[in-house]
Length: 467
Image (cartoon, rainbow, N blue to C red):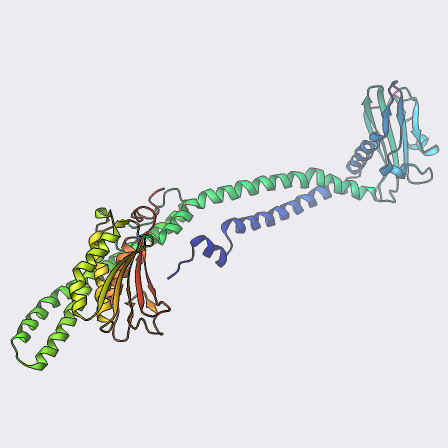
């Protein structure tokens, strides 16, 4: 059965925690910016003097770009292109630029300047403002003195009615400069810190989830390690560990129960076989065959129940080619006596790390299955390789078209068998960290293979134990 990696399955089923938190951060940041913008706008909009101060500062700062100092130290002024509204003498925007000594560098006003701006004889302050009328559109006059290498230059303006609505643009620029930019920077750093924190906090969870597939429910030490997990997630992991422990205990008790039943049945079967041998009747011979089949089934059930008690500390590296040759030599009399042929083939096998006796039993089981489920004249081949692979191939009828692997009862090769033998083989492969593969070649027959891990020993540590 193929497994979907945890991370990919998680992304397919629902968005990650980082995405959820990011969406909420953006939502609440936008709401906060809107509320703050509303407060700032209200604070400026209903205070004419403050609005006038903002307009004077903004406009004079832009007009300051027109002040030029010649190489000889002479001060001149050229109206910037974007401030063309101050070029019309009959409009609503008036400008006067003068030096500290009272020399006028630029002016587009006559009586307006005399009425609303400071007299030329007055020494100008660094900044001044006067609201000319209440309400909107704004009417204001003021000036701002700038220091240059040739002395102070006073830029003075008067706005009467603001027909082009520069007030709105000034307020928007103020909101961008003092609200959007700082909030944007803060949001970027907040995003970065949040995603980094989430990734670091969930790293132990991701590792534990990826290793959860390797947990052996019958191993007493199998559990999810909560080291490094946030407390909220660790509580869930602890609950999973407790549930897993209960499931493991239930499965172990079922295995013990099955093994006990099989063990208790073996003695009556042996006694029944002895009694049948004393009866000289053809029906007794048929009964002996049935008893033999039942005894074999009980032996397989006992072997399957005992597999989970295997101590992985006895695993060693061994040569699968030598093991395959040993199986062929041992079972050759049995196979040939049944009217079938047996052969060995090395396709470039690599060493296997595991319990040699268990793998030997599995290969013997596959050969015996091939004898039981194929007609006389079938050729049986024990193959090793390529890589850490051991297989048994036969030229018999193979698997039926309706064949489907069942992880509960094993593999059904033909009608009438529940596949206990193949279940034992599959379990032995899983104990070694490998898998069992069943194939139906195009030329006919059947191939049952055990494929072992390619690099090093199988994972025997508790999932998540390496915090």
